[in-house]
Image 1 (cartoon, rainbow, N blue to C red):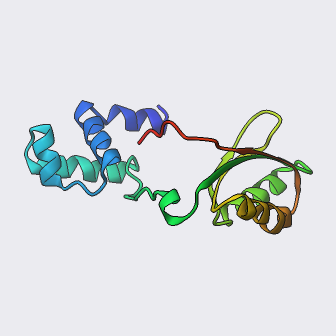
Image 2: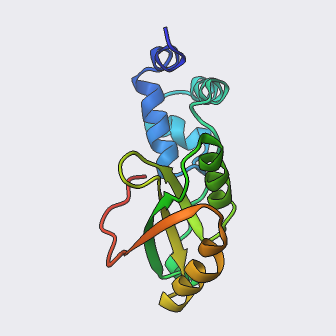
Image 3: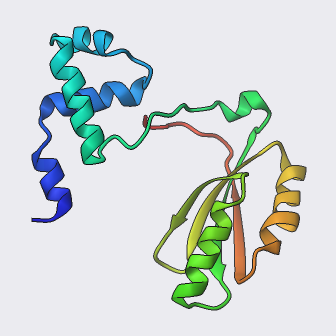
Length: 156
């Protein structure tokens, strides 16, 4: 049995309800969660600890409204390597992960090697990002940009 199947087999509907509530609000207290699920606090607390031990819950985080802190432009860029080797792929991935304006890095199949999501203030900042940050990264062969016109759905 794979590790994934092993973990899935250890979770039940209540665990998934707990995960759903924590995804909506990671600050919810065990007491509030227990009340929402009509359970006592101890089993809810134990289930959360179990899911932390299993690695299902990796951390507790916040979602920042990037627009309210001045980062109004969202762009996606398809990036292709200039030369393809395993080592160069991992080096490029590490370089992309180190750039703070990049909020997501996806290794993908197809004609592109990576799709990145970028949050910046405006088009001038995006131009600076491309010219001063991205083009300094070695082994980038091609960059194709897509500017988000609007975002309609985010699944939490």
